Length: 243
Image 1 (cartoon, rainbow, N blue to C red):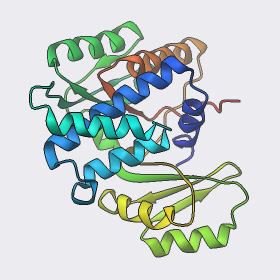
Image 2 (image 1 turned 45 degrees about the vertical axis):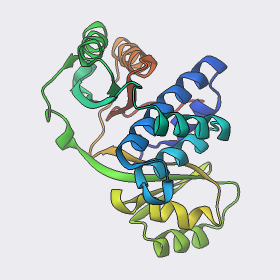
Image 3 (image 1 turned 90 degrees about the horizontal axis):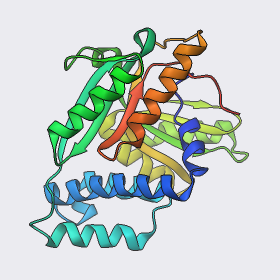
């Protein structure tokens, strides 16, 4: 999974400024609202809500915000109804891109996503045009603060993980999507979870060598991630390491 690691994204989010942090909280709140409306306000009986709460906490969203969002979603039948829509397309040099959104206006969101692709040397494609190039996997990230590699490996596999990758900064654990919550819950009793979510993992990576393409791809990702309707952006660009 080299080149795809969630850890660089986690580090980027940890360094986010207040405005970026507020945007992340707003997006997670949408996930919580959708989960509550679909399955109720009790995370013990609503796995989607449990996952959304775990995501909120891994992004340092205050408990007051989480609880307030759950109560609002449970009691407000007139609040906005968000629709989940996934868009697929190509960035510069054919980089595969998947964009997951939650929107209350599909026409606005489709236009915004298309504009982001068009403006940055890419193009939005039909549903299914790139998703076959990705595998849906649970990804759990644990910060490596001197962990014993043999011990974390044994614990992860016994918890039900499929595989794990260890480097100096983090342990990235891969699970089947349906097992992610269970593995996260078991490991959280012993380790501090930095991130746990179901992701689209690229099967192969695409490298960009021209400065113009790298700049355009970076701008495309920034433009998509800055959009309030966009929840997640997955791609198969083998990004250069961030210092």
